[in-house]
Length: 72
Picture 1: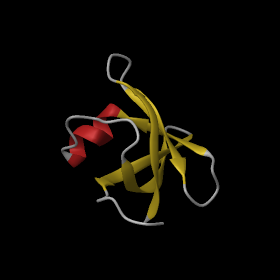
Picture 2: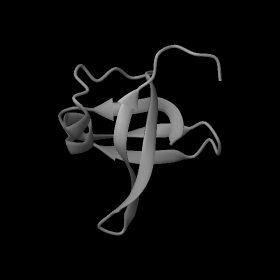
Picture 3: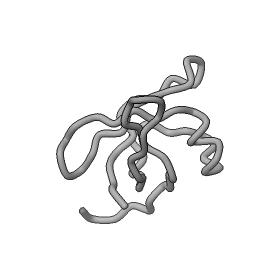
Picture 4: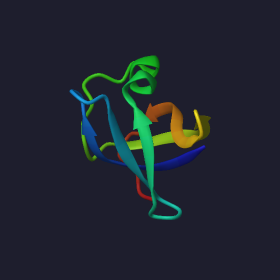
């Protein structure tokens, strides 16, 4: 599992981005993945674990989980 920080999320638009810990690159995340994981409320700045998957030709974050505050 990869980990990162939820950098930005717009609930009205239904998507956001996680900044990956290992590369610093942003990974797309769709609201359906948040819903599947039962993440509510969605809080920017949350540490998350995730797996990458192919979402119609775009790399995205899935299998999400919010991590407890922990040192990197």
